[in-house]
Length: 344
Image (tube, rainbow, N blue to C red; front, side, top):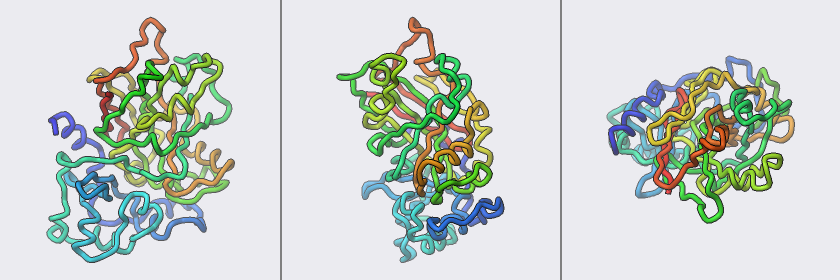
């Protein structure tokens, strides 16, 4: 692993996740109980950890951040002879929570063989089997302005599919046979932790398990193949690997206020996007309340909250230099870490 990647990960803003369990602040916030809440995922303080999917020779497995190392939960579970979640998806489903508590409470010497240095780790997408991936369009004021789009009166929702999910330091194979105009979009990802239907804006964040960095990668010539007045979000944004996400699924208690987080994108080292989630038109809480009024949100569902200004699409046509094979894209969301990928 090169020095740049090691530095980015070491500064990911998630080292504060210690080995002790903490009581979830969601309960203190008065979030109402839900019949569909997975047992244990809220009450055991798992929102105070930073999770990932470790890519190992034996397959992807659940990991949890321990300062500059990652605890391989599956390996530690075998050593302690307890059943643990095999993935972040199983964690959010409430599987193996009792065994996971024992792993997290074990002494450092007991779990030492299961610790992997961050700089040696390989990552899969931090969530792999969401029932829904909900995307937002034109949810930042300055992004709407740069694309000459009126501010929406309600959240503009569309979807991606699981085929788009990709991991940190992965490769997006560009579908150059059908598209040429490729663009980046750094976005804050909201990962639901509880079943939510018709929740209020005041209670909405209590249903969130955590947050992650993501990139709503786009093929603009597919998206606007019928002209600017008829956006084809689905075909322009659902090619394989078009939603890199992670590497960290950072518990909501570590992130705090999601409406004051810096976001950035760099292409080949050049800063292209630099903004803050305080520029959102609709807040995370408002988005959750709105979406849950339309359909049920389930644990593991992903809500990608829109991108700020600075995309290639927003530049004058003469200055639109689209992404190409060989480019390296690095994006970051404050407290959620760095997400990088290359194009081929």
